[in-house]
Image: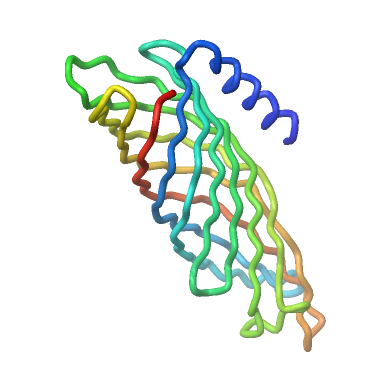
Length: 193
């Protein structure tokens, strides 16, 4: 995964001399769906969780139709869930004659989901860490309100292949955790250099 992120940084930073790079600060909300399976009985719980996030994107506009970037997300909520997600994306910017530009894109990234306070299911050591890859599509609108500043709204839907295992504190039972998908909206403000 480090090689994928490094490649994205090289692609992104390659535009620094062309004055086509940008930074975007965002906030939003993600909804995650999970499955928790008790291994000994194959009992499955389907759960979902949502949380607010903050993000920062370092991007490069390749030309009038394409841009790429690297985004880092910090996602958290009131249920003791801390999720770190990084991704590389490519967007196709749909040409229009206005300052509002729709875009469609795809992303690939890495997700780390650490959950604590799991005593309701007898987990130990009171936490589990779920790690894996995330692949997604995204769509949104970008509004250039000056030559250097822009705002955008985006919807993203991701397929997540992340899992982790923990053992029940009292029962000794093993539980498998899987994150299946993530979806959410974001609002960002950016600056073009």
